[in-house]
Amino acid sequence: MPPKTTPSFGAAVAFAQDLIRVPSLPGDEEDVARRVVQEMESLGYDEAYTDDLGSVVGVLRGGAGPAVMLSCHLDMVAAGDEAEWEFPPFGGVIEGGFLHGRGAMDIKGPLALQTHAAAALKGKTEGDVIVAHTVFEERGGWGMDHLTRLNGGLAPAAVIIGESTRGDIAIGHRGRAEVEIVARGLAAHASAPERARNALDLVPAILAGVGDLAAAQESEGLLGSASVVATDIQAAPASRNVVPDEALVVLDWRILPSDTEESLLARVRSAIGARPQPWPAAGPPVPEQDPSAASRALAASPDCRLATEVQRSYTGVEAERRILTPGFLMPPDHPVAVAAARAVGRRHAPGPARIRPWQFATDGGWTHGVRGIPTIGFAPGEERHAHTNTERLRLDDAAWAYDRYLALVPAVQAALRRP
Image 1 (cartoon, one colour):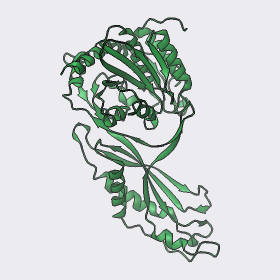
Image 2: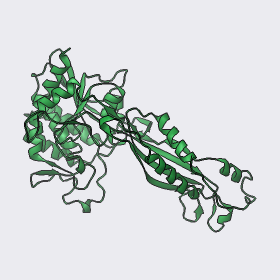
Image 3: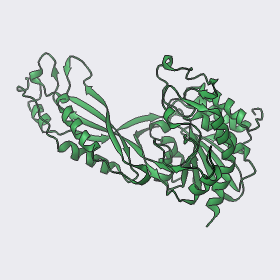
């Protein structure tokens, strides 16, 4: 058994430093997961384990009241060129009142705060406190989708996500879909382009259609407008002396809760279909080519699909997953949101915390957007530092947030109990 640890803000910061020093890209979270379980055991959690995908779950038993789940994620985005960082991305350096490094605020710093604050509440809550830190959040949220699955998954009465809110209460966000548009042509040696149907020649019309689509995005309440932008173009074969027969345009689409896979793809097809897709003149196919290939290439319109990738957890489970994080929006007057805002208060002013959506997507798209579980967000940190080489967490804000969690969890449980 690990030595016992008394939960505290100082110990949480030291724990966060440990976590930052362990890189944990999606699918490679094992070492961080092991460290989190060890911390939970040392803090006296009643249960601490990993599920079959490798997400960490800790349970602190309370009374017979509603269970509340606190959640962050174990994975992180890549650090990029470490020379571009002011402080080493995996150093866990404290300097100038900040904790620096990849994961400092997204999300290993808040993860450490949640883990310790929950332990400090042991025996003081009217219901169980579940602390669940998931895998693959950065690539579509496979961990949370699996953890809250309908048959055999966790079903807390409410969820508090630890993505940074700068001390506000977050109640939703736009989702994210990654869409691929595929244009097909006819390949040939680059020395004889007249024999080809260059798939890249279709890209300008596709991008024009995407521009039309971007200008016609819908809006939804507090979330504002959806947005879509082309973020990548790839050609195949990926050889610089071959005229490509395939061009792939990738879209990053920040979607609304009402959007579905079918509605998104229908809108892409409509926008692209409204743009003419001219081919340059080309000669007849050479003998070794299929004589009908050129006519098929001419007839085929660009295809579109939701991007997928084969994801493999560190536990060895493998699945093909769509790159889709659902959006969600809780009513700002939902009893859980109102109680949370009152319990937290404002950082530098009287009155309840501000209630607003996040700018980016979180696992809340699964817990509320898909499963319907009341979900809010609360954590220190500024969203503008996420996924950058300036990532940092202000320690005095973190200390305040740690203290507010001790009031937040009981307040949410009380709100859930009220009719």
